[in-house]
Image 1 (tube, rainbow, N blue to C red):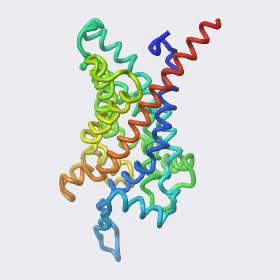
Image 2: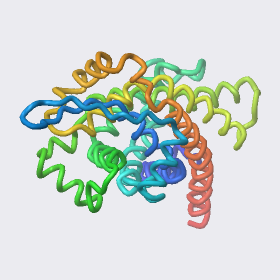
Image 3: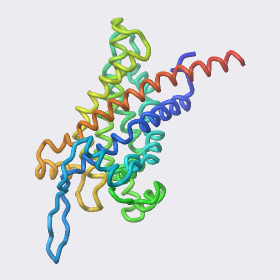
Image 4: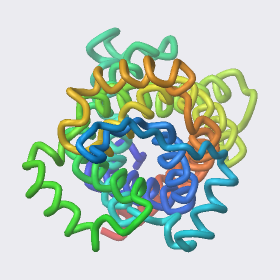
Length: 310
C-alpha cells in the first residue's frame, strides 16, 4: 500500500499534526513578524476635539523586537495566540496540504490525461491555488483571532474562545472572516510557492539523481520552498496582517489598506518583517516537511501492517 491509497482522513490528520508541530516550533518568530508588520501603522485619535494622526514611533529589528517583548511583556508574550494558531493549522494545513495530492492527480488527468512525461507544473499550480483558497474559507476565523492576539501588547482577550465571541459580538459574524480576500490571495500564492516549489524541487532532485529520497533531500527542498514563499508572499502578508488587526471601519477594504500603506509609508512597507518572515517560514518549512514525510512513512507502514494482519 502507498500513501496515495490511504483514506483521506488519515492524509488530513497527517498534514494537520505535522503543521501544528512546525507552528509550535516557529511561533515566536511569527509573533515577532506580526509586531514588525504593524510598525509605522497610522491611527487617527481625537484629542481635545481635534483629530490627531499618530504613527507608532519605534522601529525595531527582529532580535530587538523579541528582546523588547520578553522584557516588557514576559516570555509568554511570544506565544500569544498559540492556541488559535494550532487550531488554524489543524483546519488550514490539513486541507491545503492533505488535499494537495488528490487535486494534483485530478488536474493531471484533466490537463494531460495523467501522462507520466514532464513535471506537470500546470497541474501542481492549479492544485496549490485550489487547496490554498479552499483552506482559507474554512480556517479564516482562527487566523483573525491569532493575528489579533499576537498584535496586542496588552491582554486583549482572556482566551481564544472569548476572542471569537468578542469579535462576533462587536463586528458581527462577518468580522471573523475579515481579510478573507487578501488571505485567499496570499494563501494561493503561498501554496504555489511553498507546496508546489517543495514538490517540484524534490522531484527534480530525484529524477536527475542529484539526491536520494530521505531527510537531506526533504531539508534542501524545504529551504528552497521557504525562501521562495517569503519573497513572493510578503507584500500580501503585510496587508493581510494590517487589515485583520485594524478596528472596524479603519479601512474600507484590503485594497484601501494597501494603497494607504504605499502612500503613507512607501513601497518598503510591504516588506516589513521580511527577516522574521524568512526565518519563520524557513524554520516552519524545515520542521513541517521533514515531520510530514516521516509521518507519511509511519502512516503507510501502519496501514500496511493492519492489512497484513487482517
